[in-house]
Image 1 (cartoon, helix red, strand yellow):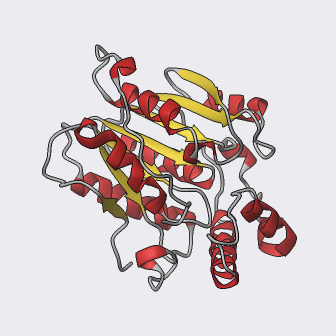
Image 2 (image 1 turned 135 degrees about the vertical axis):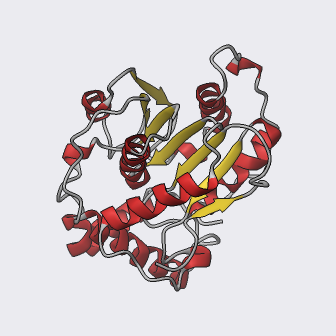
Length: 263
């Protein structure tokens, strides 16, 4: 399949831990660019870009979710040196992909320090769940509306494009058959206190996929809290990816302008 799956916003040759970030359905990984600006030299933020969006809008879409997972995991293995600590972060649909990518990496002997799934139902609740989005335009529109984009950020053409990508990702999710394996690394499930789509009880369902440690954390905000609560979530991510002796509270992230989900 053509195109690169990983987007680096920092020189790949530099040392330091790596945070691999997978975006929610219907959007690209550009929303994580600001994370690199905030973290600076503290960590290397790497975005996962699926075809059909941003700079990959013309690339062919994978026919199955397994095809996408294999491509992402293979590129991580090729590009991330084995001695660099890695944490995988995925939001919503990106959390499901992140879980499967982490499983594949661990199966290939690649050590992953931790997986964070945000606003994401556990794998057994994903099987067939995308059917409603594929068949129901109103449900797609409701999911898009939850992002809270104003008219100045989302004109009619942009809205239709995002709906198309959402439908594409929903269709891709229908090929998912469910995870059946525990992870060797620690697993954290994060939720927004005001999220109407994923409940704390559903987040707790991730415990069955954690082979070592599991923890649920709640943050202020709704389904897309990962875009608004950076001062809370970035210290946690860095604390996971750094050496255990580091003090995550020492992180002070300078403020940068907020960005829309597709910038």
